[in-house]
Image 1 (cartoon, each protein chain N blue to C red):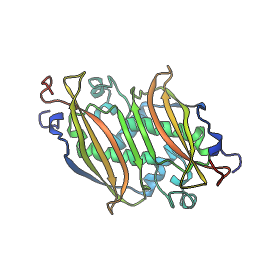
Image 2 (spheres, rainbow over the protein chains, first blue to last red):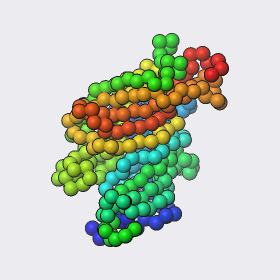
Image 3 (cartoon, rainbow over the protein chains, first blue to last red):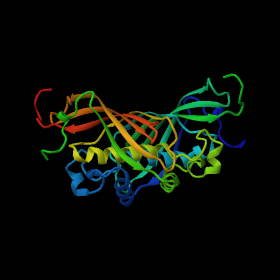
Image 4 (cartoon, each protein chain N blue to C red):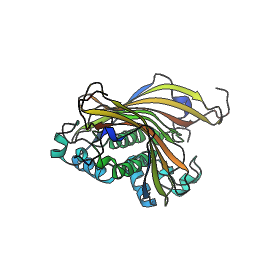
Length: 154
Length: 154
């Protein structure tokens, strides 16, 4: 466990980039068919006349792909205890088939938990970007992390 | 198109319930394996010692299931043009295998778009509840809806 990332390893202002992750048309359509079967996520012809201007994945697919990249990037190598939720998600650009995605992270805030001495709270921004560095989705969320010095004062 | 729900059909305070949707252990593990492979979403033994206190689905799976219920419930029968994002997601309780989920919706705000006379913005709260009415996940999001009287003053 000692080589895993703990609360103390996250400093305000820390930045990192994770990925890449390629996403295919097949994945986009499969996710939409299961969870968000709106025409603009399923069919090019139907999507052409929508705000997406062509086939684009569900916003929830963007979130799920972002999650997978940060899981592989650092969460699975950390003492993460999960997250209470998300403060904000912005779907700024369509998730297009065939792109390569990455995630840029930045630590906004790191504070001890008041209720649990073994836990710290790390608030981060996540930006999912495509091949041309255009921002597809942004998210602000707080991760609950185990503390290396559990019980020490903040 | 005339029988579809338009912006004008959403009034502040309107409430509805959609679902149910059953979720299985197999679905929970499959979603986690693809998008959020943290041990508490994949394996009962690993999950027992986490904050979830037993196998629970990814929070993003909760969001995806909520989306599917509102898609079938009203979005696919509306003039929805998508959503710019989500203001808040709270993962209040674990997504447990074998439960039946429903979604309660409430319209918080309905206003004309300033930039697009053919569009209105409907802000809603979504609460995903289980068999015992316990709230699993809440969400606040704005849907972009086509207007029946496009171009009329708000």
